[in-house]
Length: 558
Image (cartoon, rainbow, N blue to C red; front, side, top):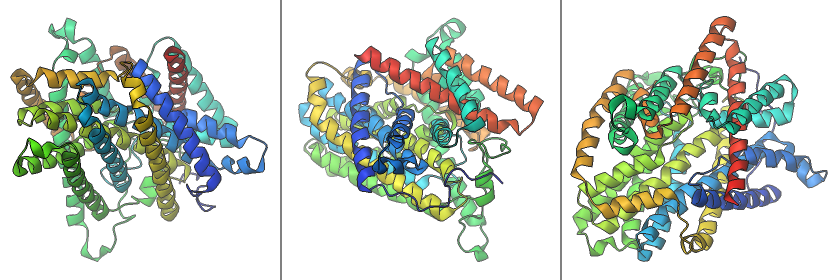
């Protein structure tokens, strides 16, 4: 059985609302939100600030004052990285990007309703991740690669020793490769995630990247990837529900609660020695949330999304251009779109560390136009769908880091309490992000600074419905659905192929395949016990890539 990580079960988990801790969470969240807004409006990307949060927490813990010594707790450091990463993605991807859609269209009357709707979607998605994490649908033993990188960085700062050296070597590789222009996160992910899923991800990256020479058409300029994604995503959603319902029906009547009964499926062959990527802890202790909780989480999320959709429709004045029946249908479609988007994005994030939130939301925008919703309804729909899934994916990374630090579910009570505190830290980050965006968005929009995705959404809405786009999406949804159906829910090959087609980065594709070949070769030579070391190296590579990307983005944005 794996050795528990630092302070896995020996102490009461720190509380998010401890005065000193809360003050640090708010300050770092403000910094993360401002950094996210600056970089997404100048470079069009959002930096991964989780590792920066870890480094800040470690630095704070080294301040020689009694008040800061408590930050030597790995759990407090994890709460800091949770809040700053949530604030960064929330401010940039969930809020400024979405309210930029009506602003780019000149619909200032929809800006405040969009901020309200995006805020609701963001919080609901984070809550749904909390309800669904470490279930059969989204097991904690899944890869969630950036979460492993954050956990390994915290452990290295706490323990030092060989583990820290291995992580450091990986970080140096990540920084060096990133400086040469190689997407090293793709290389690092290959050491951690499911080999089948990542093989399809790499294949998609290469196919789309070389689609011009191979097929005579640039796939990134078509709706082929989007069709594949929507087909695979809908099948994945059905597979998840069937998986939970089937296990509930098979459960013996005398078994009482199913918590802890079933072992989580490993993300790949279980590493010996309990490395960060190990699924041994889940296999030993089972899920911390049972099937009935997963179904309740889905149900609560669906109800909340319908209610939020109705609130958004009323706030946006959609009732003036839509009858009661059409208004209700819009709210139901918006709720279904949000849940489908979070599954698509969440599964991609779990297996590969990428989340195609923009492309997924664009599909539902086109479908909204196809169903004949008026322009204001389509504007609000696109932002509503786009706002939630980044919070879901980023929350998965944070919960994965916490799961490792707390001993991989070895103490279910400690794990659930720690996860609850992480949720609260994430909500602090969301609240800070809402405040920062509400106060500063005009500074960006008045100077013509928008997230590039906001302009793409606005341009698509202005162009109107393209019948060819709908036909292309419908046609390519079929192979996406078939691949996902045949490969099954554990491999998620349809989702991962579509994700690769959307990202369309051939260099990243070669990086993934190179990493997989190295991983397979090392495992054949050294055996399964090498999996733990590979996972630590992969986490270091991802951390190094994130550090280089963050600081280079800050320099370029100045």
